[in-house]
Length: 97
Image 1 (cartoon, one colour):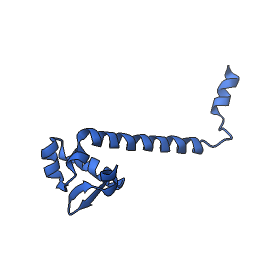
Image 2 (cartoon, rainbow, N blue to C red):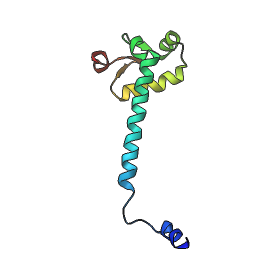
Image 3 (cartoon, one colour):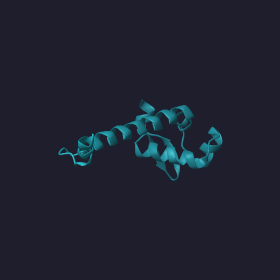
Image 4 (cartoon, one colour):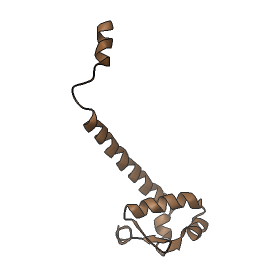
């Protein structure tokens, strides 16, 4: 038993970096998927067929303005919303698909 414990303390010859990279990429994909699905369920894309500011969007959908800000910024970062003068609207990509 003691012999096996020493094996656990030895540094493996193979780097864990490829496994960590794979897990990180997988988790990022899962996060993006959940942001997209949640945005659809919240009705963000339906509401943003016309440009709206966060205040107006918050009142229309009945959701917290700070949370909507996070969602809209993430969707903007992914290219699904465009932002101009503090107002969001669906991008061509999200309108098309």
